[in-house]
Length: 89
Image (cartoon, rainbow, N blue to C red):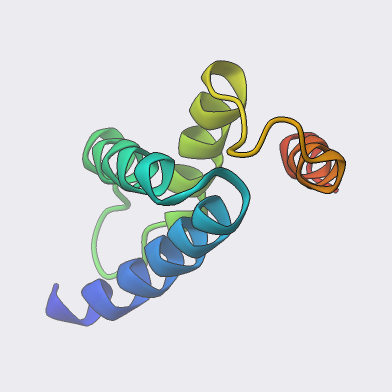
Protein backbone atom coordinates (compact mmCIF):
# COMPACT_ATOMS: atom_id res chain seq x y z
CA UNK A 1 0.00 0.00 0.00
CA UNK A 2 2.93 2.37 0.58
CA UNK A 3 3.53 2.49 -3.17
CA UNK A 4 0.23 4.38 -3.53
CA UNK A 5 1.22 7.35 -1.40
CA UNK A 6 3.62 9.00 -3.89
CA UNK A 7 0.90 8.88 -6.55
CA UNK A 8 -1.69 10.40 -4.23
CA UNK A 9 0.79 13.03 -3.05
CA UNK A 10 1.55 14.04 -6.64
CA UNK A 11 -2.15 14.48 -7.46
CA UNK A 12 -2.84 16.40 -4.24
CA UNK A 13 0.19 18.63 -4.76
CA UNK A 14 -0.86 19.60 -8.27
CA UNK A 15 -4.39 20.36 -7.10
CA UNK A 16 -3.27 22.45 -4.12
CA UNK A 17 -0.81 24.39 -6.28
CA UNK A 18 -3.55 25.28 -8.78
CA UNK A 19 -5.95 26.33 -6.01
CA UNK A 20 -3.23 28.43 -4.37
CA UNK A 21 -2.52 30.23 -7.65
CA UNK A 22 -6.19 31.01 -8.30
CA UNK A 23 -7.74 31.35 -4.86
CA UNK A 24 -4.91 31.96 -2.40
CA UNK A 25 -3.22 29.97 0.35
CA UNK A 26 -6.12 29.87 2.81
CA UNK A 27 -8.43 28.34 0.23
CA UNK A 28 -5.66 25.96 -0.85
CA UNK A 29 -5.45 24.66 2.72
CA UNK A 30 -9.22 24.16 2.92
CA UNK A 31 -9.25 22.49 -0.48
CA UNK A 32 -6.43 20.15 0.58
CA UNK A 33 -8.59 19.01 3.50
CA UNK A 34 -11.55 18.57 1.14
CA UNK A 35 -9.33 16.47 -1.17
CA UNK A 36 -8.16 14.29 1.71
CA UNK A 37 -11.75 13.82 2.85
CA UNK A 38 -12.81 12.83 -0.68
CA UNK A 39 -9.92 10.37 -0.88
CA UNK A 40 -11.04 8.88 2.42
CA UNK A 41 -14.65 8.32 1.30
CA UNK A 42 -14.03 7.27 -2.30
CA UNK A 43 -14.61 3.72 -3.50
CA UNK A 44 -11.27 1.97 -3.34
CA UNK A 45 -10.49 -0.69 -5.91
CA UNK A 46 -10.02 -4.27 -4.82
CA UNK A 47 -6.65 -6.00 -4.93
CA UNK A 48 -3.62 -4.37 -6.48
CA UNK A 49 -5.52 -1.87 -8.62
CA UNK A 50 -4.45 1.75 -8.23
CA UNK A 51 -7.15 4.13 -6.98
CA UNK A 52 -8.29 6.87 -9.32
CA UNK A 53 -6.93 9.87 -7.40
CA UNK A 54 -8.47 12.17 -10.00
CA UNK A 55 -11.88 11.36 -8.46
CA UNK A 56 -10.84 13.13 -5.26
CA UNK A 57 -9.56 16.10 -7.28
CA UNK A 58 -12.77 16.40 -9.28
CA UNK A 59 -14.98 16.23 -6.19
CA UNK A 60 -12.85 18.71 -4.24
CA UNK A 61 -12.84 21.03 -7.28
CA UNK A 62 -16.61 20.84 -7.47
CA UNK A 63 -16.85 21.87 -3.82
CA UNK A 64 -14.43 24.71 -4.45
CA UNK A 65 -16.28 26.08 -7.47
CA UNK A 66 -19.68 25.86 -5.86
CA UNK A 67 -18.83 27.61 -2.63
CA UNK A 68 -15.86 29.96 -2.94
CA UNK A 69 -14.84 33.07 -4.84
CA UNK A 70 -11.26 33.77 -5.92
CA UNK A 71 -8.77 35.93 -4.07
CA UNK A 72 -8.56 39.40 -5.60
CA UNK A 73 -12.17 39.46 -6.79
CA UNK A 74 -11.60 42.80 -8.53
CA UNK A 75 -8.83 41.43 -10.70
CA UNK A 76 -10.33 40.69 -14.13
CA UNK A 77 -7.56 38.24 -15.02
CA UNK A 78 -8.17 36.24 -11.82
CA UNK A 79 -11.90 36.19 -12.54
CA UNK A 80 -11.27 34.88 -16.04
CA UNK A 81 -8.84 32.22 -14.78
CA UNK A 82 -11.27 31.14 -12.07
CA UNK A 83 -14.14 30.97 -14.51
CA UNK A 84 -12.04 28.85 -16.85
CA UNK A 85 -10.92 26.61 -13.97
CA UNK A 86 -14.45 25.99 -12.80
CA UNK A 87 -15.68 25.31 -16.34
CA UNK A 88 -12.85 22.84 -16.87
CA UNK A 89 -11.14 24.84 -19.57
